[in-house]
Image 1 (spheres, rainbow, N blue to C red):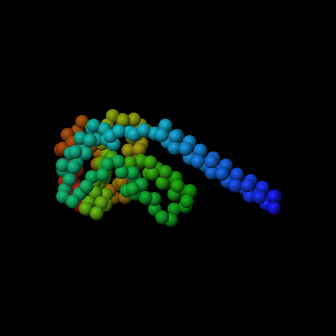
Image 2 (tube, rainbow, N blue to C red; image 1 turned 90 degrees about the vertical axis):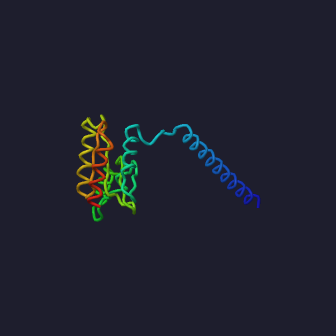
Image 3 (cartoon, rainbow, N blue to C red; image 1 turned 30 degrees about the vertical axis):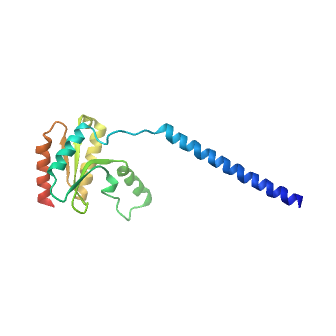
Length: 167
C-alpha cells in the first residue's frame, strides 16, 4: 500500500511540475511577444493616401477599393500541379501585395493599381514589377501603374473610364 501511495504521489508531483513548466513557458512566450512587437503606424504613406483618396472619389457606384491586398488573395496556383512545384509557385505570391484592388459590387477584383515611387527604379523592385505585370496579364486582371508625381485625379479618371468600359 505504501508503494502505491508513493507512486501516486510521484505521479502527482511530476504532473504539477509539468504544469508549472508549461505555465512558465507560456509566460515567457507572452513576454517575448510584449517585448518584440510594436505597432507599425499608418497602413499607407502620404503618396499612397493621396492616391487612395483620388480612387475613392472616382469609384463608380457599387465599386470598392481595398488597400495592400495579398497577391494570394487575388490569384492562386492552379490545381493539378505537383506539390513541390506548387509550393515554389505559391511562395512567389504569398508574401507580396498590390497597393490597391478595385472591386465590383460582389468584391470580385476587376483591376489593380500600383503606385510606383523612387523605389521602383531599383533592379530588384523592377523584377517584381515585371512579375506582377505578367501575372495579372495572364489571369486577365488589368494592372495600372501610376507614378508618384503624376496628376492622381487625371490618371485615376483614365483608369476608372477603362474599368467602366470593361466591366
